[in-house]
Image (cartoon, rainbow, N blue to C red; front, side, top):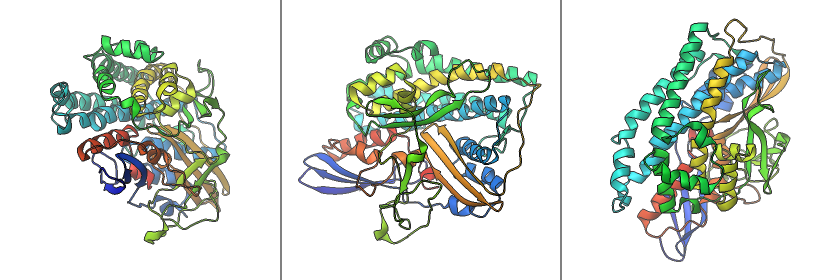
Length: 491
């Protein structure tokens, strides 16, 4: 890949939900440009057109088997906004618990089964640390896999208690959840969360969740990594230092969060969410004006619109002509800005000192994205314990209201990978328009009309490629740090 200018297409990538291709332009040993392609179109928006609005609760969770709860919550919130319906307090707590269960299972899966196995590739076999890492994290055969799958399966029992099943539950509704919890089930719920806490403390961190959550800056993180080198998080941090992963995958450093986990009445936390809603632009936190969201299709294989449009006014009409664009993915922008979403964005907006310090020093990068996801395991599990204790089995879990024949509403939620939005318009009792922007749509978008590259395209630019084997591994680390879910991207 050395030389003055060369192009290379990478993909499809393994351990990715859906199909992904990346085209790279290389000059003088560095990636100068990248084009990210979502090559599989699925058409959920066309399926929803003309359906009764409540059918969205059936169809949208089936966009993805990994983050179906997030899709359910977004659809339920869009319907609630159409009806002007407030969820029951128990419904808010139960929804938080169901959503957090899915998100934390996703964080765990990403780290152990998607991200860390890349360090067990034979490219690294000459490194002194390779045998230890391969024994622990090698895909399918590493010792971590069986432990993690068991802990993940036990955690997902929570969705059985509160949602009946996972994935594709119908329990999440505009006014709460349909599955009330009985007193003895509340004990079982707390037991399940407690067991997950023990797994995190004994296996991932070798430390209490509170100690991990309290880390303030990179110096404290380095000291913690030295003191907990035998933990799985410690192993990752040691690798990150040796391989200088903080120097890989820099993007826009613009971040957005729709706000994660709604606070119910009487919640002792201030604000409307456990993790704040907002944006991080120009090196400071600012309020989010979601009216400034626009979707551009100038480089998408979609029927071209006169201008970028807000999702309420947008459309998704395919144009299979090969010259119409290079991806089925749309191009979401916030007031024209390229935005990164995900755990790192949530923690930047919310103001966690460790993530702000890491990003201030080195920008968003491979290391800091993974740290943010693991930090959320430590932050959200205690919040789940709090929500479970506050459930009141004798009180309502769901409120009901009629849906107007003509209305519109948006449902915004934070999935594991970042900000997910559903925009619904209803006319004559039927869905007139349903537009979805998934987290990977934000992070893996193609270029916009101003030729600004998307977040991943930006993150790949400037990457030194050296020999082919080294290039492939570094590119994998960068892509994997965003945890792509392409089936959501091309819903």
